[in-house]
Length: 298
Image (tube, rainbow, N blue to C red; front, side, top):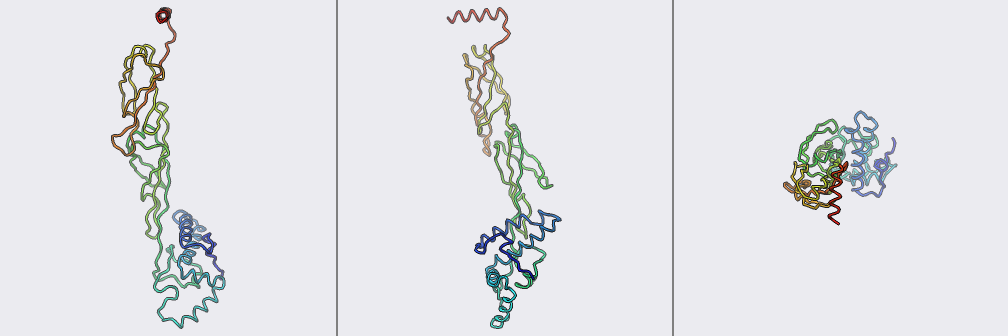
């Protein structure tokens, strides 16, 4: 009957702590869990080996016995039987009334395990652990990110509807509790993490909660002043242009920028840069007028 190297199965050293055993077990159990590897017999076998190793190494008494006898476990059984006559008939030599720990439902353990630790059937306690977390990415236009709205998408064949709060940023990650995979042995479900990718808008550059845009105005409005209509995500705005507005001059529109995430009624600012358009294709009369104007300035 082959000796089972439980330390090798979990990929840990013989000096590993209880926490190290737990971490190694949970990592491997998630990787080879049958729910994540349907119809994969190799993964199922690996999952059984992992559970068996955890069954022994997570229990101080069983681990002590395993470490003590190791590959000579068969002679260790003879020693245990000889010591049994000095104990009370109802005493458990491996830890009193404490049940075995394990995570696999069908009780399939190796002959090595059954011979060394006995048959596990009998209602032993089973550990549980939370399900695997899911990760997803969701692409939004900047216009979509401006407004709180609902979206439905599919994760592992399951339709999930979520409300996306206005003001979400590019690269921002949110957690939806309990929308991951099912837990094992009654453990809690995993979580769903969604990372947002915001498609830039060439018309409105976003920096934090502030927006930046450019407004084309003609030379005459720049010189004499006037009004212009500007588009924003919140609708059209009438903007007053001051006389003698210089090219690249900036106007700040307070509270007309991007909504602040999860703060209702709070917005950043909108900064408008003026782009003064120089007239082209002038008529002879227009050129003469500009010449007269130039002469006046002299």
